[in-house]
Length: 267
Image (tube, rainbow, N blue to C red; front, side, top):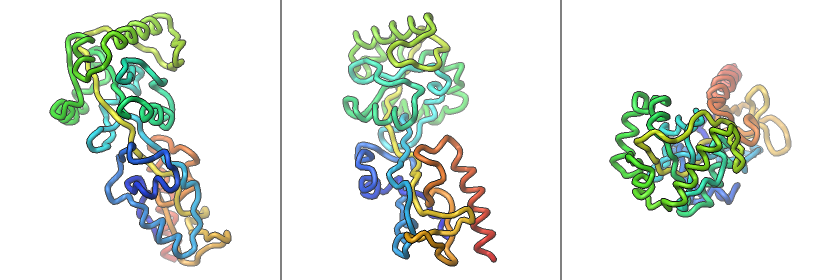
C-alpha cells in the first residue's frame, strides 16, 4: 500500500509537470514530500493523472515557505494586498492559484498584506497566533506602525501610491462595491492605527496529481487494468480533487481512501 504523500517539495518534479511552479515558489510541505511513491508506482506500470495541477497558497513565509496564519484576517475580508509599488493587483479573496500567480508576477515575487488594529483584534491574531507573530517581528517580516507612511517605509513600499490605494479602498468599502477587483467582501475600512504589514510569498500547498486508483483504492496501470495487490491512498494519488483541492478536503481523502485501501489490502 502506497501512502507516501505528494511531491510539493520536489522542485524538479514540479517543473516537469507544471513549469510555472518553479524555484520562485516555495513549499508549505514537509521536505520529505518528494513524490517517491509516485515514481515507484510509475516504475511498475501505474498510470498517473492530473500531475500538472499543483495548488499554491498565496500568503506564506518568504524564508521557509510555511503557511502564515496571520492571513486569517484576509479570510475574514479585512485586508488588502499590495505590491512594492503600493498598488493592489488581485482580488484578496480570489482563488489560491490565481492569487499566487499574481503575487509571483510582482516585483521581488512578493506581496505585502495590510491590517489595521480593528481587524487585528477582530481576527484574534494575537490570541491565536502569538508565536508566529513574534517570529515575524523577529525576522523583519512584520511591521507595526502608528501611521501608514511609517508602515510602508519599513518595506520600502511607494508611500504616495500606498496611501492612495488605502484611500480608494476605504471609499469602496463605504460605497459597498470594489470597481477595481470586485472583492466579494468589504466588511471594514482600514483606518484604525496602529497598522500592520506582513511580507509574504506563495508556496506549494498540495499536489492534486498522482497515482490513478479506482473506488477500491486499487492502483490502475497505463492499460486501464488493476495492478493486483497494489493499493494507494492520500496525496500520492491523483484524480480525487480535480484542478484545485478545497481547504481541508485532504483530510476526508486520507480518511476515506486510507480506510478503503487498508481494508482491501488486508483481505
